[in-house]
Image 1 (cartoon, rainbow, N blue to C red):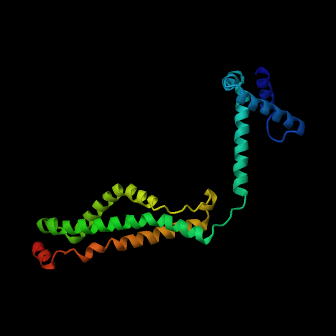
Image 2: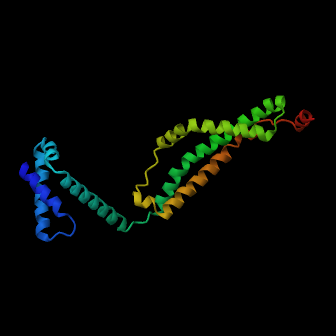
Image 3: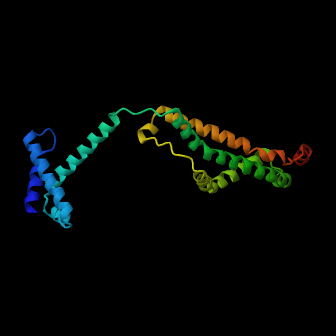
Length: 214
């Protein structure tokens, strides 16, 4: 194990960037020995940690960081396949579906709560219908926080297929437009459905409002 540590120290102290072929081959051989030692000996990690010098550890850390940056650069430089129309539709659907529930719950509770407040506090305290609507909207927003997880869980139970897009594809302009479009359409549909209570609720008569103000 001591010989392996010495080999690692020599390899790290040489540096890992732009080495001649012979030195690079020596480094590769040492690292293969380290890998084999870690696989065959459970205590090898502790022994290596105790035997390696701080400078060797720093050089190895810098080499690993450089390697990871190089891999990330290569990944981002690779061409990204554009999503198909069907995949973009699926992204918009999966994004917009929860917003239908959010829009419906928000408008539904706001109208029901606002109407109740308008007919009770509006008459007794003389607050305006707009103030009642504002209080109703506050209640709807608070309720939306509680219903958020419920709506998302219901959408998951629908079993919609995943778009199977990669993280780089999700960053494309077309994918982001599909997500925003799905959100806009979803919240619009939900808010329109949330207007349903207006067909059944009775608003405060205008005469009552005027008499209270007078």
